[in-house]
Length: 113
Image 1 (cartoon, rainbow, N blue to C red):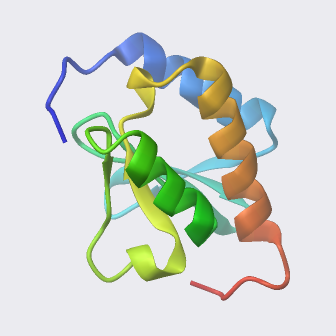
Image 2: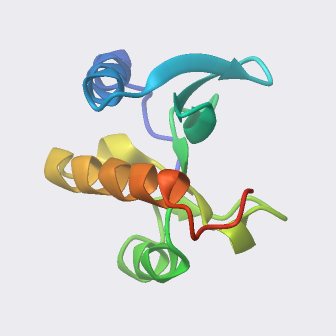
């Protein structure tokens, strides 16, 4: 994943998007995260990327459409966890990804991880 300039304004916009979507801000291993019903939906990474839990089909589509913006966290990607440089995507796409992540995490039929 390229190391483009980290955009603090995007971080602020994303934080507002998360909280306006009903997520609460917390912390996981010293990094900011956003939770629904106590479960992590999104986790901010040190390089400005965000790790989200999305359906595996969506994960594969993201990898195909944006291979330079996506990486898979070892061991966790099989559960749908996907790291994306969101600030490089259209904001509409970011909103859609967050909505998908919220649905994935809060859905009763999904594994607990």
